[in-house]
Image (tube, one colour):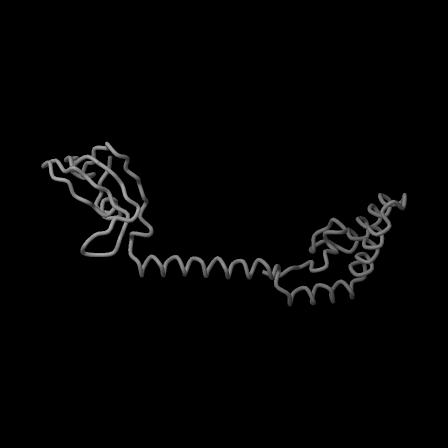
Length: 168
């Protein structure tokens, strides 16, 4: 998509790029009368500049040809590029690190009774939560200490509970 008004001349004259020469002249005359008091000298100078360019068919055609070669909004194009890179990065991280990063996280409080989501059978009761519990067989992770229905107490990795459909 191309910017048909790179200097803003059409917008300044309050017309679209598809109007006729007569409509451009009428709009210019109206704006000239509106700025007749001279309070907005810079505005009237810009309006005259726009009319000088668009009021003449040859200079208008040249203005339109020059506009056709420019992107509509270079900042928008770079913004879309950054958005695309962010999406690619997010997908890459999700693929590399698995669903732990994209699974919704629900926290459990001490005293919550936990159930399997699919069967609604009880798992146990939450006793405590540690942000970094040291597991003997792996790295420290966020974990819950749970008193199981059998009466035993056991530590569970928080992400495993959520991934396996445990709910309060």
